[in-house]
Length: 215
Image (spheres, helix red, strand yellow):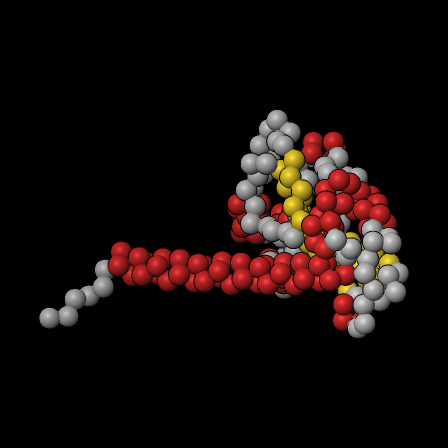
């Protein structure tokens, strides 16, 4: 005798499938992050004098949170993009996803401080660098990662989590407050610029036909 599936059983199956897909996505993301960090480490070991360890020591000696960044709960990932040619000349320094609040200036000073500390090379494929730097506040929930991680103590109150901004995004989107919803999504992109899911959500929202909002 065949049994009919109850609504509860169907919902449970959907939840199990969703959890499985979510776990697979998390594993894929971790593998991608690990591969990126491994490639960065290998490149720094080859090009920077003293290797990755020396690069990190210089970085952490020069870069930390500014009081205003801490006070404003600034959490995000700056992607440092630059070139060091095979004759050790620095160039084309860019900051994707800049965070401001004095943090950009600290990163620029660090980059300038690396001048003269690079090894020569034989091929141009060893001249381009892309290094994600995560700035985060202790106790703040975020899925963002970085090759270099700068963490500061809590400013004395709880900073907003990734979940908070996602809930705000969904709530505002349902209410048709698209501009405000996108602001919440932009906070998440600033935290985790490698998360392609955020860009897909933004693309979907931007294709919606919206009515004028009362902000």
